[in-house]
Image (cartoon, rainbow, N blue to C red; front, side, top):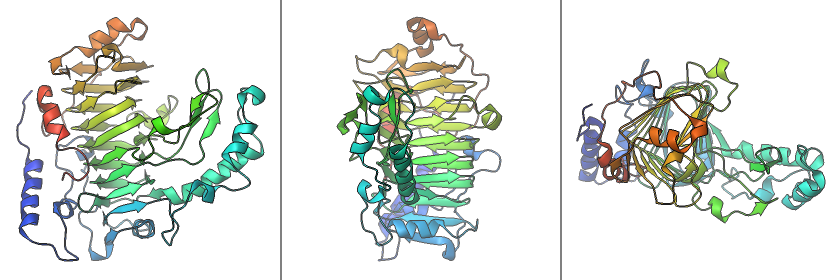
Length: 436
């Protein structure tokens, strides 16, 4: 395997940055190189999204389909229109999805309808009196209706042939859930996704041994879509960390779902140079064990040069797909860590040349988790600066979860592979929003 110290795309970005700095921007000109880079498509050979025609997003957008948006109403309008002509949307500053059309902030109380309150819901379905049956009746109906009201504000559909890019270093989508559903040829770059929170989590008494609270609204969903490039973004719970949330019925009142999900027959996705931070169930590829008819032969995803920092689990969890995870840096939390690589039903995960930073409290055998899968390829991964055969450690440490060592395929769509020992220095300083 070759190791490259330089990369054409990085050089191009640095060149663009130099040109941008050379000219003082006017009130309507590009404030940084991120404007120029938004016109770039995915380089050839850069992961699964480069296959079968590649991914260009809105690179060829004309003036009528080029927008700069600063609030939710402008973003929603830019995404609408019904045509599939290439469109390029620059996000400037912070856009709060939980606002009305005039920009007024909306609270959970503003969405509540049909008499819903958290207090009434908790009283109605307390396991001590309700038992372990699924919630039903007026308060559950009111919760679902209230959730539907919030969904109309925070879910924003992204059409085909679209690029959404942050303008400058501080573009942020707060509380938003971008839905790339049934689309083709989409690019998402240079954005901070923060705190896509659900005001109305649902109680499921049958989820696990003691029940669990489940929420909606991933920061970014790729659902039944193809050719999607997710690059140089930051995903975080931000102002509303799970650690600060209350516990009801003895369980965390979970208001966050995933940071990025690739599901329901989605295919040909590359996620590169992103930061996924401070989250529980982070990145799911394939959402159901029973979705083989939809997902088999699809869910081909490349994950490279990403940072997974203080992530509890799903980095990623894979079902069915051929997933190439290389040159990522995994920084595990000292407390609460569950696993990084989830090997699900019929998954073909290839994990190579990654760097893992694990505190002494983390059992290395738990980096890999078997979820009805049978094998993965795990090669040349480093833990705390030293090579470790993580599959062998897993099989020795978790006898009930034996896994084979062959994912059944070999990735070819890679533009660079860095030495795993160098990955933390390379990735930590370049991944995430504001670093194009």
